[in-house]
Amino acid sequence: SPDQMKLITLDSRLGEMNETINFFESGYEQVSLVATSYNNALWVYDPINFQLIRLSSKLEELSRSLNIAQHLRVNLFPTDVVEINSKVYLTDPDHGVFEFDVFGNYLRKIPIKGIEKLVISDQRLFYFKEGIVEALNLKDSSVEMLKIDQCAKNNFFVNRNRVAVTLPKSINIYQAKG
Image (cartoon, rainbow, N blue to C red; front, side, top):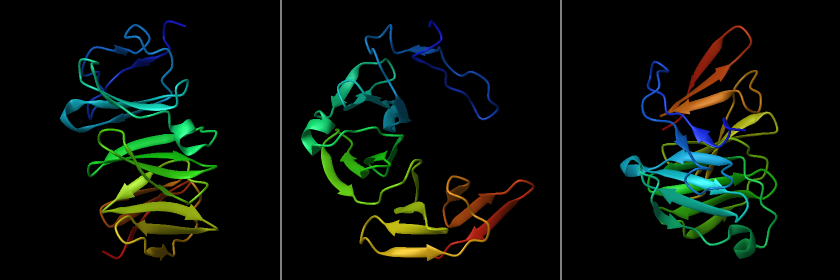
């Protein structure tokens, strides 16, 4: 379809900012995930070649990972990608979170399964496990448990040391330890 494989960037008022990016016309047959990167670049995930590709704002290729599925020997079906603090995180709920440097080089696997949406703030990876929001410190691998009432798997957001939980008729905000 002509409307597929396109990316529209929006400003804070949901107005279109730039021209629509057409990945198919730029030579990318499949793009399943997109994330922002430093210097107005983008990360895209190519599910055919199992690669992370960093593109400039003009869609020029800046870097490309190896075939992640071959390198790690897994069937990969990632659901989210994000770049934070010069690291790129790719999550596959069946295999865990994979960490890469800003050139697409594989660094490590964080063996926490079931994460569909990446929530990273203040060097901590937040995730929902058995009714509790946990925060994995990405530097020292310590885990902090946050006791939050009525929280469900994908209805929480983190900004700095605050966790916001969306409920049917309200939003609760909790202060996490710093």
